[in-house]
Image (cartoon, rainbow over all chains, first blue to last red; front, side, top):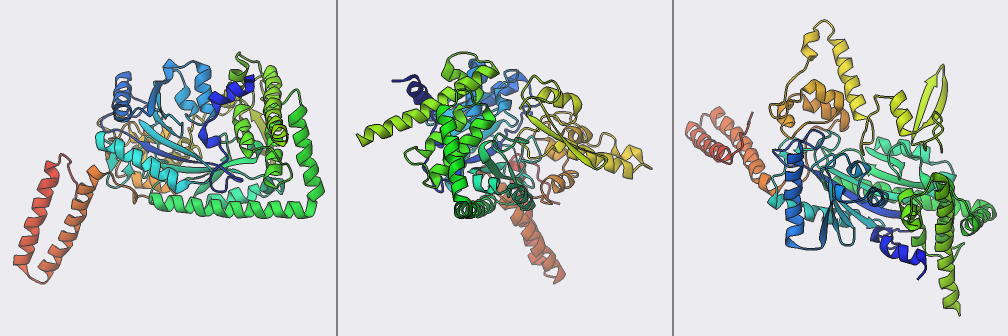
Length: 359
Length: 182
């Protein structure tokens, strides 16, 4: 087994898979429910004793009855491991802060992560590959019911689920989909779309969160309003919007193919050439090239490389993963070298598999 | 991209500034951004800077009420955690679940701002709570019936409904929660 195969064995999370509805455009679906316990201050102000009490109560519900969950306190993990969880979107950067008490309860397949004592006492998070808003919500809702049956949730008749920040009050639900929109980006349509989306009470942003540029043309679309709309309506509106974005992206792809087919093919194959051969790759460039290659696969221009490779690589090219792959701490310059190596080997591995099947 | 200011750390924030009609973009790292724009703070996953938003709002309100400055001082104080309404607006985060009751009067204004005009929850209700909510709705309905009965001078019926209301109120109170039915 090569080093890259060993690394992948431990690193791949199901949500990076290529299955799921509309998985050529929708990379993943995420549901987050914010919940708090009555009688405890919120994590911004609480004492260590309160933190421990919240943690004990929540952990008892989930790890008590079945053993498909593991409870991992942040202070039990080295910084690099925490960063890896952040890069996999399983925990937030805030939870990973070693100065604060925090714990994550992870399901074995990593599709469920429950953050304890982040901004709220409990944040239930479910991530699915592809577009699966309703299914992911049902999973989160079921967990919520299990927790609610045993825990004294803070709930208000007027304002709904009580949260630390008033932007989460009500349903505590943040639903988001991660979309790969290369054609809409290339045709300079994203600015216009972001404006239109904000008028619908939803937000579009780069996939690495706020203020981040859309690295690799990956955008996150989520609901902004949590109060005054039912969960179903929030999900339905987001689903409608996502479907419209998929339609627009598909139309833009067709238009690009029709009008600038040679140029587009050239760009895609150049990017493929760079990813397969480069010795130094910075994050920005790697993301742009991965986006091109992925588009090439979706359009049938490049064959024999699985799309999931691109999903994985977008995650694995981040600093903490690279360092885990390298097995040592890397300076920024060294990271670019390892990033190039990782991508080269992973794409080479795909090609190797293809050759074997042809034999 | 490297930070435009320190040229050391990777840039993570884009700051757009307008000066004399010209817009300028600067790419800064967290450290430099915090130095130049100390009011940005950590917004977690919120789509916009709520503290800033809320504190601008109270400054606006204070300016309006310049003739009566004492009305916007600390505001209500949460009996459980001691957070004042003013402090809540400054930092944009509640202190504990009881803050919601302490600031109940002011909260619709806050939610109107940050939740696109919405002030009332219409989604999921925990099972343990739904009994109470149902009882409250029933009481409201019965009060309407009682008024109607009084209006049509059916006092016997009105008294019967009143007793039913009292009984429901008692059972709610015994449930441990003080219910404000007005």
